[in-house]
Amino acid sequence: MIIGKSPDQKMKKIAIIGSQGIPSKYGGFETLAEYLTQYLSNDYDITVFCSSKVFKNRIKRYNNSNLKYIPFSANGSSSILYDSISLVLSLNYDKILILGASSGLLMPVLWPWKKKFVFNSGGIDWKRSKWSLFAKRIIKILERLAINNSGLIISDNQGIYDYIREEYSKESVLIEYGGDQIYHIAPEINDYEKYPFLRGKYAFSVARIQPDNNIILILDSFIRCQDIPIVFVGNWNNSSYGLSLKKKYGNTSNIYLFDAIYDQKELNLLRSNCYVYVHGHSAGGTNPSLVEAMNLELPVLAFASGFNEYTTEGQALYFRSSDDLMKIMKSIDDLKVTEIRKQMVKIAERRYKWSIITKKYANYL
Image 1 (cartoon, helix red, strand yellow):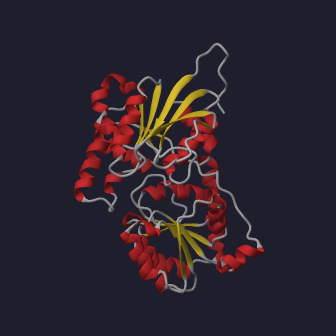
Image 2 (cartoon, helix red, strand yellow; image 1 turned 90 degrees about the vertical axis):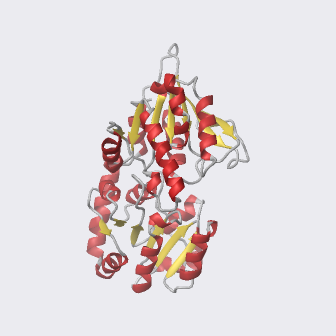
Image 3 (cartoon, one colour; image 1 turned 45 degrees about the vertical axis):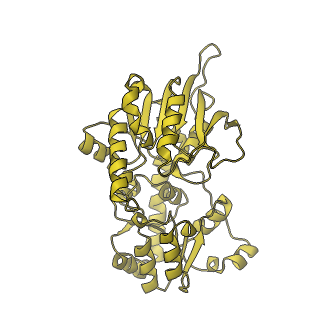
């Protein structure tokens, strides 16, 4: 924790924009905003901008911080309006933490306030395969505008740090994500009745159902390796892509597909008791679900994206294809699982705790 301010010392005003808001339900930016307010609100006057499209019960205070609501969503094309309005309303704050590049369109016009802008891209979003070619071009332009017009840039992964240096000749500060808010839950009798696979070994994965998370690659490998089932949690019903995959793979005997679970206790029950954790994300930086798995001491099998190797310090097992993952699943044993478990939690203790992450942010706010 930061040492508290003296009674006669004015608290610095911080605005956090770009997330859907808090209390956090799902998503890395939302969780980051939640823990920044939890750890730093005694020392800073924090305001988090929230989407009234998401939060119907619009409370004014949370985690000792102010909440302001904007009538647009922080996701999709409306995010440009959402972030731009939030940015303009934040100009009287001492520092503005900008999560995502959607407000980049407006930032060049606001150059007199540039020193206030602390920008965290959260990943290389324009590379995600879910976007059309036109959308990718727009997102790349917004990214460039945000990076070139920020007083400080935060990278959440060494791969993002290297990308920003090489692509834009800009220096950034490396601050990752915490993941210690999750916890292990031992199954009870009724849990075994609801989820019979808890009685044995199973793989687990959780992700947004989009192509750059290598959903097909993962499911295809488990169709070909039926020695162990996989439990996959995601927003299958939210897109035609997800619905088509659910139709194709949903009736496979060793594949369990569950729609997004927002009850953290239930989600933690499923992932904390798995034999291995399968992580297919390819386009992000330090992915929140990965560092959560590491904090849970789960043995990680990760797509070889470069970002994931940085996050796990090369101590997990990595795959590039369905064949790779199938071979790993056929050869992995209890001894290797135990070894990876120990390495993952060791790294998490050193790097991915919210107490560590929020102190780093405090140095730049």
